[in-house]
Length: 70
Image 1 (cartoon, rainbow, N blue to C red):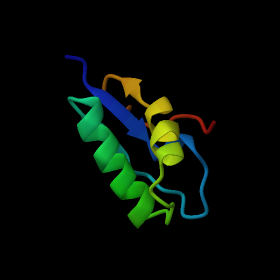
Image 2: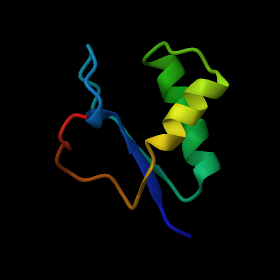
Image 3: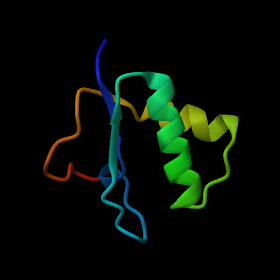
Image 4: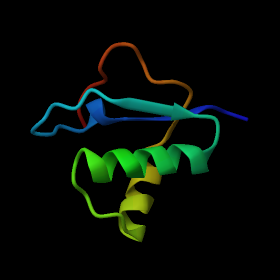
């Protein structure tokens, strides 16, 4: 099983979010990412949001230094 992560630092936002989330399964990471996106960034939970978030997953763990913005 490969650890996966998603990193808000890759995507510029007004709040300069520095959160990176990692998990051992896609399902666990997706639920955490949806919770973060809806609570912190005020996105609506939708199939489109979930699809977009899954497309942002990377294998491994987030880097210590902020990645370059997309």
